[in-house]
Length: 383
Image 1 (spheres, rainbow, N blue to C red):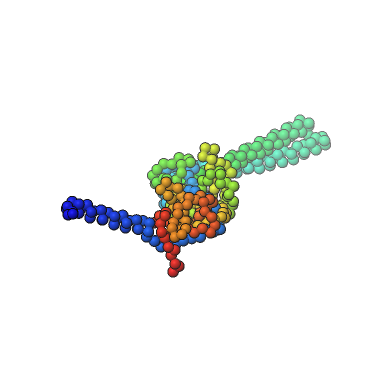
Image 2: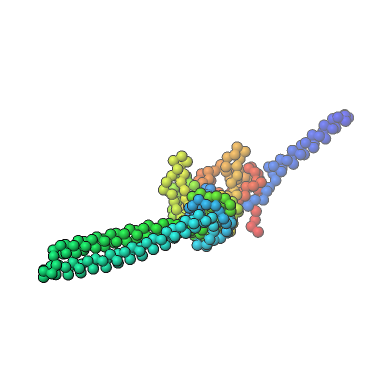
């Protein structure tokens, strides 16, 4: 029987299809793939508390004006390092200088008044001594009958007047000396006010903010510069209350700054006040070294080592997922892979701890990337 052209075409197509299906079946189910395997074994993985943090400074100072004045000069800028006592800002001091000069003039006048009062006291004292001498002499002469009682009465009255004169002179001197004390206090206040026009660095540190420029008017309390001590930088981390029991002072930590720099550190302070809304609290971590480039409030990722967990471990790369997204591993049995759902708890950058679904001694694909379930495999020989 002769085949028609159409029939021949269908037969050729069928043969091609069968060939492709066979090839796909071999590739999918018959082809052996070389894989590295790992044996599920007893081991340990570290326990870690992870979370975000921000870079802060324990010693941070805001340099503010203590008088109402105009900024004359700002001698430093953001990023500059400063030493304690260094002049950073000068303010207009004309008003303060004029006040101090006026008070100093009052001091000179009061000093002259005191000298005058002292001279008055000395004169009154001399007059008192003279009146005392005259009263004694008149009293002696009256006993001898040479002068009358009226003369004695007159000298006694003069003595009382001289004593009153001394008291008055001394009171005047005391008043002038009190004036001197008051003016001296005013001079000190004016001098202190004048020092407020020269802002000095209160600490060794670095300028991180500049908030005023020459020509601007600042009020009392207006911030001009903000300084931090780079040696006191640390990371403030927010953690949930549920992990509080795992944390201890001195625990080691790894801190990865958003800039990419990684630093070592340790737990330096654990807050004892929790946020009522978020149920979180602050943990501060001291840094082993100062970041090469830093910015206050810069973000960081923190990992605190709090201990370790023991159990069955496999390589972290052995974990995979099935089509439903369920986590598991590929167990190797009789040269084929089988997907096995597992429960994992705790991992580091190499190992993961399996708490259910896998027995010690079972063989799994060490790196499940590109390997499928129910695939023929052969164990790669060590090289």
